[in-house]
Image (cartoon, rainbow, N blue to C red):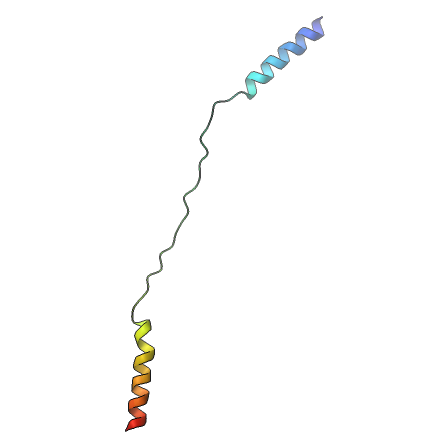
Length: 58
């Protein structure tokens, strides 16, 4: 009888130790790196082409 009472007591204590409240999961924010772009990159090649054509024409 003592073993049954001890097993019951351990079951109740073990259950109470595992019972916890709801904790909302924490999700780390995603880091987004913004790359700054320059409009000069799209102008360099046409300008070089224009200079090349002007050099060939003269």
